[in-house]
Amino acid sequence: MDTQIAIGALAALAQETRLSIFRLLVQAGPEGMTVGRIGEALEIPAATLSFHLKELSRSGLLGSRQESRFIWYFANYQAMNELIGYLTENCCRGQPEACDAPCVPKKSAKSTKRVSA
Image (cartoon, rainbow, N blue to C red):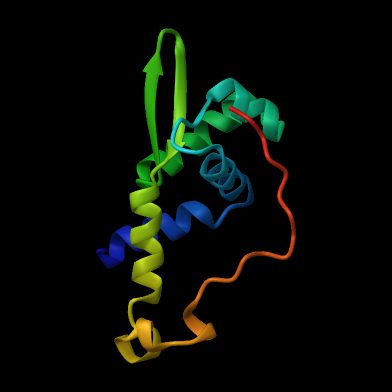
């Protein structure tokens, strides 16, 4: 991953609302969620949501598709995994497979609320 792309993705996630949207869409799975459902789930006004979805899409972390009159947004798992790879590629002197716990992502102790699409 190019450094500038990584910076753009990290900048997009470095805002509370956008991070919440991204985490919700990661949880929703590949089918994603409609704009209305995202707004309802996170209690975000439409204009504000539109701004944040645009920023996340521009960073490459979200994709979208239109079905009938609904726009569905979904997490771009490939971009997410490339970002994680970029952040950890030099772990343990460039040999992450040789590492124990320090380079292995930990699950959060905090449980997250599941929201259906």
